[in-house]
Image (cartoon, rainbow over the protein chains, first blue to last red):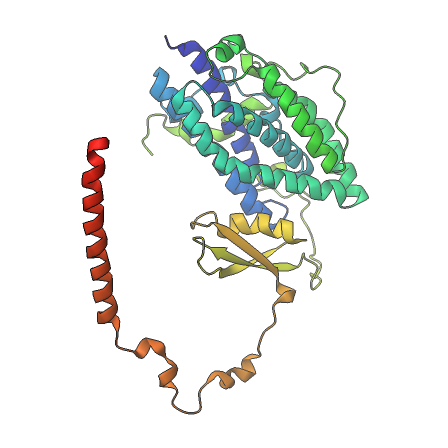
Length: 253
Length: 141
């Protein structure tokens, strides 16, 4: 017996995170720090939106939820299951890189679990997405490593950015009420297990980059996204993202 | 004065509108690396362009997205542009032969028909041998 509620819960979260981070990071297109990085970061943002589309398509195929375009562009903020980390503004390049780094390491951990998913099409998709994510991780770790160790100023600014992004990133692992069911059905490991793997990998990478692991007093500080409770930053993002779609929601592109 | 643009991202960046522009200093950017692209293992690496980067690691990072995000690629090389040595164009005439050297142009040999014949023969032989093997394996499958 397939548990559709668990599948929906999982796929919405996976897809919404990808869509929102993809849109956020695309805000750097044209104003990136240098041409080569502008292209690389934009290309990755486009990848993330492609991944969101792949998850939405799976959601549509398996559970009969709306078409990918309808799900992506025709929902209220409270219907989104993305975490607070991805909706936060781009701030500056240091923060955007720190967020990218936190997010990519989390995605690596998550995809590692998803490739063994009992839901075959999801497992296959995870294997496919991992190929592109490999570059994303290399990009994130190289930049953090460079800036962490370049100059006193770059180290200080990277540390400040990481201090801001890191506690938010813990919201990626906010468990939903389906958390146990998802693990029991073999869809994906439980959130606390993924979080533990993320913490270990983050500590390793942060130390390699010559930075300090930020102290977190309350890991639930940025929880809420998985329940549809978002920060004030999501509604304006959605408004901008859906501006063209809203002109005619039935148009075929 | 901040720059106001129809692009909301530009307006949000709150960039100061410059009254006068300073002249750009020469060589104030990162150095460049030449990028070489290999489409299949064993093929020659082909020069595809250059990227700005502070070091080889970053050059590879940028080279991948600039030059390998569309074409099929299995391997990239990056080389500091400063490490490329070149002949001057003024000396281009040294590449021009003074006497007839067409005998060095191996592609002038008329042997295509012979190569084709050998290839056809090889293909015929191998298809015969696979058919006989297949016959034997089918029963087991």
